[in-house]
Image 1 (cartoon, one colour):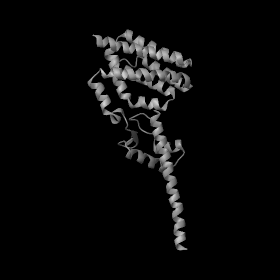
Image 2 (cartoon, rainbow, N blue to C red):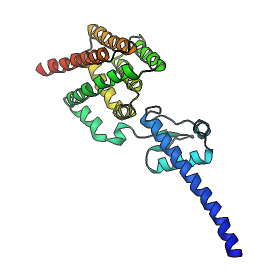
Image 3 (cartoon, rainbow, N blue to C red):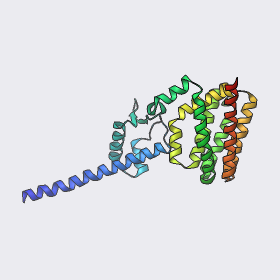
Image 4 (cartoon, rainbow, N blue to C red):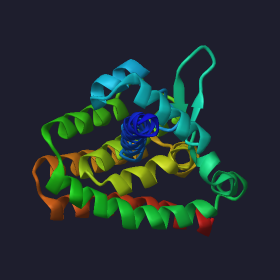
Length: 248
């Protein structure tokens, strides 16, 4: 009888441990999905354990176990003073990419060609998938680009990146948003070069704003063909500046 009763006590305990483990697995997957979708950007702090537990409908014990696992896997790191942040930035994922761009500006042309393929696709998809809040975010990003609050080339580059991230969010493609978030800092480097050297005149600023406005209006109009054409026109114009620069 003693042997049976011991076994009977062990089974529920084992079942509870397995259940906790499966819940923490699900929480870890949910957190990674937030990161992949761009809801939590590289370098950004995660919500507190309590808020994550409320958001995901689980206990704080399960959230804590999930975060510990993601820290061990290198996705997250503890923040001094408390909290947790995402650490998978472009330099973590591929230090060579950012360094290649810094050392040889001609490598930006390759990135430009890749952007031309992906962002045209993303603009088309955004016209098909964007929701009301996505359209509001695009308008805000566009206003920020044209605002006097972004007078320096660096600020203009950051506002430009925020616009393209807003297009990515409006596309509702988790894969595309993750790809763009991984190369975000390299994209900042690229657009900083654009705004300081490649097209730095007031006329260029007006052209960039006109291109981006056309993209937003096409997405707002739910017109995928026009959105694709507007993004292609902008990136073709940018590529032409690269060719002019190389010809000098």
